[in-house]
Image (tube, rainbow, N blue to C red; front, side):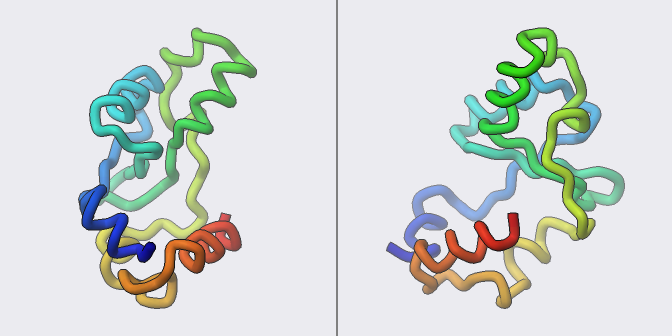
Length: 113
């Protein structure tokens, strides 16, 4: 299986949310869009972090349901780069290519995280 196989199935659209949105809003968006993570974008659509299902489960365990009213910024994994979504998804050939095996892309993603 290649990265392109997944992109054909899941699509190339990047789903974003603002850091001021609530965790509850992020949960709704994750469920409605059937995705495992949302890119958190700030001013001028700069990536400031990512919120994943794993982030939500972790804080629900640590804090409880009250965290659903908290802003995404308090729960997300913070980006250290500050890049725009198009450069992440379409331009950076150094990270992966559509023809790359998923195993290779997973290794790259694991080394970045």
